[in-house]
Image (tube, rainbow, N blue to C red; front, top):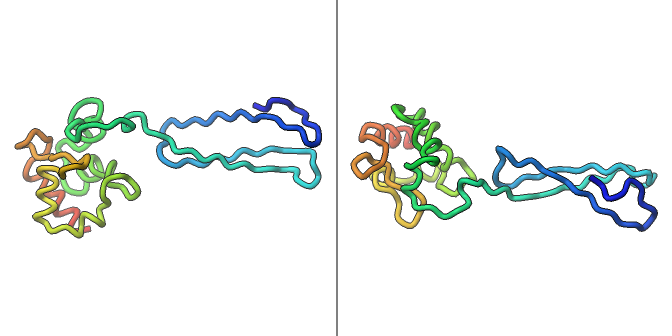
Length: 155
């Protein structure tokens, strides 16, 4: 919405822009085209840059919080009964995708099998990575943890 449909030379106006951010998070760039009767600049393109905060992740949470609703819908439930690549795609990729706050799969590959298994089972102190082992209250069985280690190391 423009504050006026006609501006004289040298006059200023305001342009109000609404951006729908549903389903978006992180850096977002939008463009606004302004048409003018100025023969030297008949079209001006403005770039709007914003950092969209995800409403679920904007607060500071305890790592184990992801095992409770509503977090568990994305971080646990999609991977129930799955293993290996299917489990990784369902539950792990959300946080471990390149550019996210958690380490990427290429960084995880550099760990030894033992280090990787330990982190998946018991978590990583001072991070948002909780322990996923069923024996400490997480959702994963020993078999599922081993399948994740094999998948990550085999990538």
